[in-house]
Image (cartoon, rainbow, N blue to C red; front, side, top):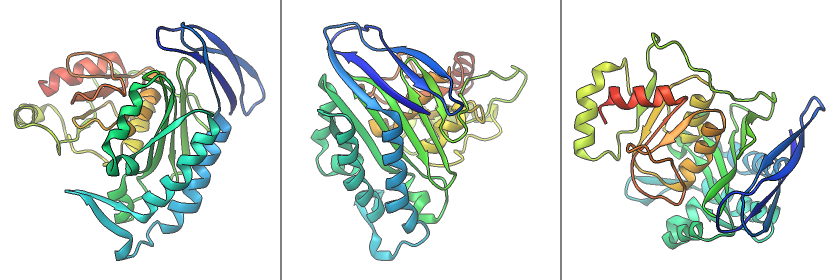
Length: 309
């Protein structure tokens, strides 16, 4: 799908700015998105961004998939590993994303691991790229195809564009604020359709970072579900699965912005919900812990009640 967005931003509230898109079938559809404020124009070409991400996967990730040597993997912090594929992909893709939106800056996962202060870039008003060059590093190391590249464009603390590319599944998901979400290869629009209330609630909980009291509460209520074990450890796989209706919910605790901003926009633009346990909506600048995401408002509330949180 070819699209060139023109969003007018400044610090403040929303202003409408129209732009158009041409789909693979050739029809033209007007879109509306933007901020109401004094004007700073941010332009992006969705096809260019998707192309840069796909090319980076083909050059830096796929050749190393199931081909890593012992020397290609190291521990970057306690319990966290990184590969040369993560680092090479970010080093190449980061500048390409910056070049696609003049005046933008990059907050990449690997750079932020070296300099945590980079995350403060999100508090500014200019365009910021968030990049996870290899989401699901452990899966990648183990030879599982469940890994992804995730990128999101943030302006004035608001996510306006996200791309999630799953190289081995040959799927790329795009979401644009106010314009919906779709998978690029088929052009399929993602629209949340709620299942019958009588159907079993399918979802999972990432337990690794849960505080003890929340963990005990969830374990006490675990009998309400067949299983709460995640299918994967990759947000770049889990968020699209919920947006596509394959699963109902997911509870996360640690909220690194590059792990969640891309998926949250995909989910909310398809009709889903991403909110903290007190009901506040997710924002990439908000670093508070605990995020429940679900395919619909009804499923979000049902999951919260059955989890007991």
